[in-house]
Image 1 (spheres, rainbow, N blue to C red):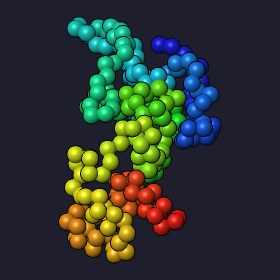
Image 2: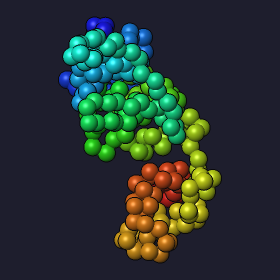
Image 3: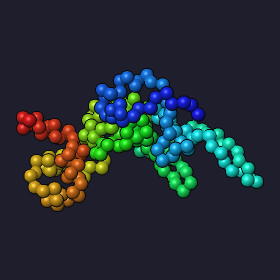
Length: 208
């Protein structure tokens, strides 16, 4: 089903950051087999997934050809998903991650899949890149989709508490105990994954 004209490989450099994708904006849709599901599914540079034609046993020990088809995707939370199946295995795939892992490279350590235009349902290769949690937070601020600090429904801390955590010189374990949160929460604040706007504000205040 279709012939691959070009598949992005790691030898051409990882697709990380905005500067590497401009020449891909007008690329044609190309397909490549999904790792771990070779011969069963392919994904395209437009973020579509299709099954491949394959033989299927029928009554009387006969064999028929099961035609491939484009798989239905659905939105769960902010992202698009699709179920991939093979004997004994069912995997719920996040489309944006599969696109990058297929056409770019395996997920680099500490990286997540980021959407350049802020639309988490736009899973074209030209709209995706590997980036850090800080990169993703900056994207959300740029696109106006970030819920700041206390405005975030899941926030358990006030802005004053978050600032106190950032400025504290105690160990992460001690800070977590002082504020009644887990150590990972402290780590996320210190690294800018949570409350990222505060780091810039504090840096400006201290003239950094």
